[in-house]
Amino acid sequence: MSDPFGRAIRDFHRGEQDEPLLQLDGDEVNEHPIEEFYFGERTPDQDGTEFLESRLEGPLLDLGAGAGRDSLYFQDRFETVALEVSDHLVATMRERGVDDARLGDMFALREGFGRDRFSSVLAYGTQLGLARSMRRLREFLGDLAHVTADDATAVLDNYDPEYDETRELLGYRHDPTPGLGFRVMHFEYEGDVGDTLLFRLFSPDRLRDACVGTGWRLDEVNRGAVSNEYHYQAVLEKE
Image (spheres, one colour):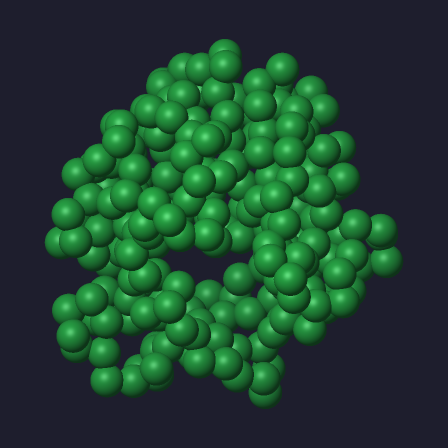
């Protein structure tokens, strides 16, 4: 399967990246900032770290762990399992020192983990939107409830389509339903074109609605700094 995204990040890590990783929607093209997004070291005094530390405990499941930035930080504090769907990213994490980096699909958690396996979950990078529909989002939350303990916490993130800044993102698509939107794009690297990605964007209120009947409730919403409020982290707790 073509994986320009994972391969470009792996090549950057190895010092072998000679061409940019491109993010495209039709004629609109952005260069994806690999170093900024995936290789900045998380530190205790970094913005957002204190918030995460107050909500996460081990065993932790890091979903869509990328190059392992967060897993590298939290594995020194408690057991951390990093999950990625890309062979290239799993290899990158292992080379960088992630203790438990595994190949797997975050939307097929029951296939990889047993009941009550984790005390907390982190999914940072808006990959939650790859659920693609609200029905699939509810199914994911049900699976997440299955693999987490009764008192578990999950920290998830997305873009809020009720903010104008979200509508300016590459690939944004309007949905007339309040609190909902889409994002469509693909990655390209060294002429290798990846699959088209469809993200479901939803506001915190829509996420709260999706939690009903899944075993989760929305406990807190933490928005980005000024000019970045359209990106939010949602804290879910078990009911």
